[in-house]
Length: 76
Image 1 (tube, one colour):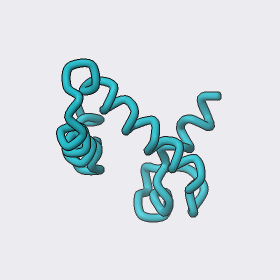
Image 2: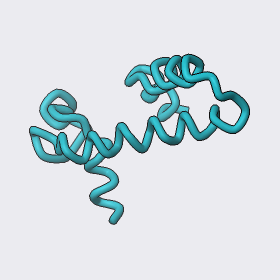
Image 3: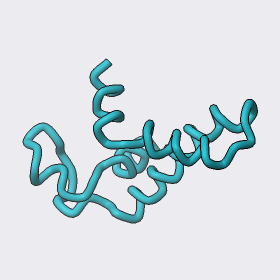
Image 4: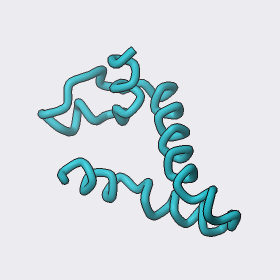
């Protein structure tokens, strides 16, 4: 369901703070948790086959999964 997927990536309060975002004012925190988990899984899936280093994986999640980085990726 594409609509649920889009809601999962909608941060709570985004429609209230940004005029270009449409959705429920409170967002959907439950689906946002699912979105965050999927994002972490995608990041770690890139790292896991070549490195078993848990610290490296955690650092990738922290560096790549930031809102600022994701915003920059979306702009590209």
